[in-house]
Image 1 (cartoon, protein in one colour):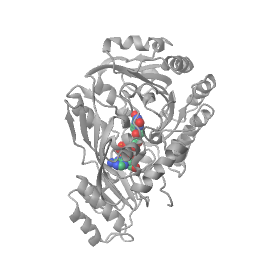
Image 2: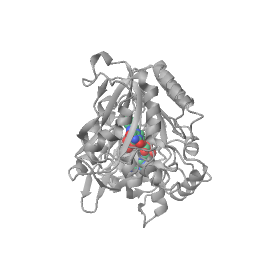
Image 3: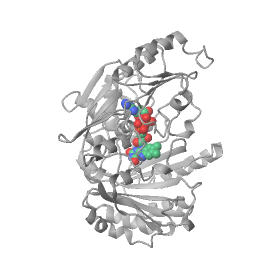
Image 4: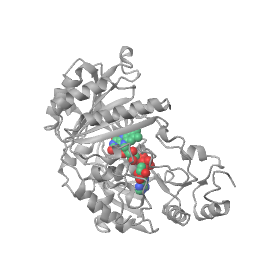
Length: 472
Ligand SMILES: Cc1cc2nc3c(=O)[nH]c(=O)nc-3n(C[C@H](O)[C@H](O)[C@H](O)COP(=O)(O)OP(=O)(O)OC[C@H]3O[C@@H](n4cnc5c(N)ncnc54)[C@H](O)[C@@H]3O)c2cc1C
């Protein structure tokens, strides 16, 4: 028996699990464990679970949950492994890894995709684009469908098609007591309500069903980079434009540092810039007109906004955010983007401690805003913007980590007066107990607690922005 396993599990016990599942069960002694235990965020590089179970289907998930409960093991659930807060791994516990369950089946007539819970957005886009279809996915294509959708899902097509969770028509869920239940409008509708934004609190989803929409293969999309000196002008123009822009366009302003990409003139590499990144679900030849008010704010450093394959905008940011980077995010929903906030954001941008410190201001509204408040667990719908401070670094010294984390907190603190007080749970890099309550707001949180108490009364699924069941 290994030292690592000694305090928790014996080999005979692990053998029971190996016999109960079809997927691999990996301990520190097995080839493949080192790779299997790693998550996207390198800040959690040292975390060593006792077991990683690579599930091949719902039966494996049921067996793994039962095994974890019998042996009193902490459960971490992993879809794409992109949790910024490190929820999809745990020291000494069990990782229920769904990544082998990444099949995607498209029904082009019914405009539906059935997606395995281990799929990433690249898997979905590959299958759906073959039929000229799409659903709202992530800005980085290696992000998992599961965690992304269950938290909400902000993406390039959201103002026309809705958030990812708004396109979630049904799901199969393994509950804490090992049942496989269906959540849809007709079956367990309250559970479906909770899966649309309430995170992984209620069980382990094994299969998702999404609504699809005609799109592509070419769309109007891409980034325009301007010198950082234009940040204020761009943010002012963006604020005035965002409220009246049609649903087909979704845009983000990103205060960042020019990456060393061949498409950006070399003299700008490593310099502070501001990027407008946009995508349109409308006709390609109407795209220019949609963004003309923004494009003219300054002489661009590089202008790549134009016709491009949908696939290209979906993967554009992938090279900058690869697995193993250390990362911290902090976010808040904005009630307004006022002059004072713009001034503060421009200043804090210039004080960023590293080249992968980004301030994202997401344009919301459109289809996202028309879903009635309370219709889904992604509760707040009226905010015009979401602010997200995104950081990444490669040096694992604590000082560097602290500088990046503190900077992200400063960005969000700068917005305290303009904030609605709520936040999008998937953009929160902290895992403290109160995060969920304040992110959801009291009314939604109370309803989530009732649902949690029904489906997971002993908080088996607690590595998430946790909703504590009653009496826990
Ligand atoms: C590089 C990067 C880019 C991002 N871009 C965006 C973006 O454009 N828009 C956006 O909205 N968000 C974005 N995010 C945030 C992202 O939505 C969350 O990190 C999300 O949790 C990732 O999902 P995952 O399946 O990869 O995560 P995982 O780490 O696998 O899972 C995260 C959590 O989700 C829950 N979970 C996962 N799978 C299941 C399941 N099958 N059943 C039940 N619960 C489950 C668990 O609680 C788990 O701990 C980004 C994150 C990163 C790191």
